[in-house]
Length: 155
Image 1 (cartoon, helix red, strand yellow):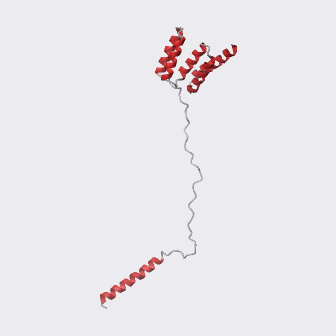
Image 2 (image 1 turned 90 degrees about the vertical axis):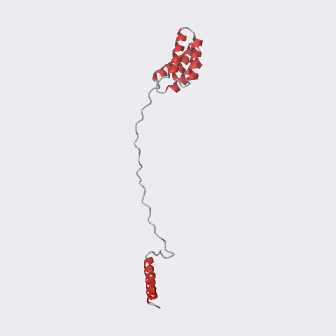
Image 3 (image 1 turned 90 degrees about the horizontal axis):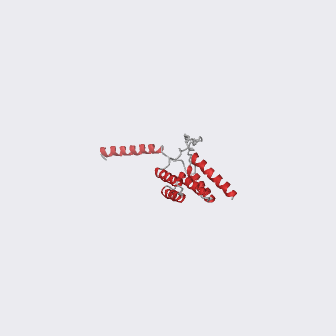
């Protein structure tokens, strides 16, 4: 063997020896012994409570311009003694604005005038369910309900 071949073998055997020593540090545990894994860190036990802002009650709903127009027209017709026409106007208004508590209340008052007490109570109750925080309409509705009950009892 020539000198170059011998040097190559020496370098190759040295590399094998070094790699064997290097990989010896990466050895796994012998079979049959359990491997220990540390437990995960405990989760925070304190519950995070989000900042809660106080909720303001909604302002009373502003009447719809169309509903106000129907309401005024019905009031004028009622003052002229045209109760049936006034009721028809309110019913038309409710087809346009079915969630307007003012129109329901006004119609309940008309039914009270026509001595339709059960219908008046029903309409006033419907108006209350739509009134939200509008205490003026709710007070009027409670008066209509009480008055219709009182008049119905007197018949």
